[in-house]
Length: 66
Image (cartoon, rainbow, N blue to C red):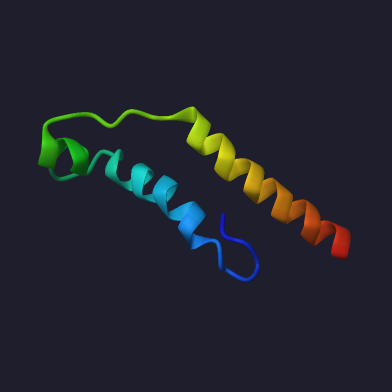
């Protein structure tokens, strides 16, 4: 999800962190967030849309340069 220059981590990192913290761990059969806070994370689709628009824009700019 990072761009060619890998300088968009500030945009990509929150979604990556969410995915990691919301993935079931094999040894505990719980997500890391649930194990620490006894709560399940909520997914905000608007945040994902913002990231995907940015990724799509970067891909389009890259393809235009070819």
